Length: 144
Image 1 (cartoon, rainbow, N blue to C red):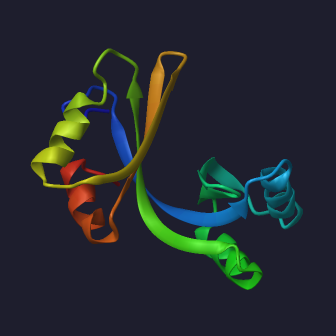
Image 2: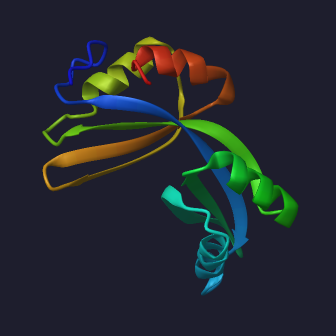
């Protein structure tokens, strides 16, 4: 696949729903959340967590079925925020994200958060933007 806006060979972008929860920063807290989701057969495409303040962490998840996880977390008071994220993937090469980030910058979009990883010759990055920038971001990176 060739993404004409980013100019990256084999790069593609997908719009995804991202849910954020606030959990205690203590041993086993993430495990408890994941066991709970597994017990309810609520699968994830991705997740990451980090300590944000003493005693608390933010957990971001990309659910396979956002509606089911959203509804479940609302009922359990875990859901803190919901937003749109973009998953960009392609061949790993030096500067693989440069053209994508140039398109984002030229569109005047400020990134809220990004995480990237390369494994086995491929890279993937998850990019979060402010809710008001989601449609502009989708257009800038030709997200599906």
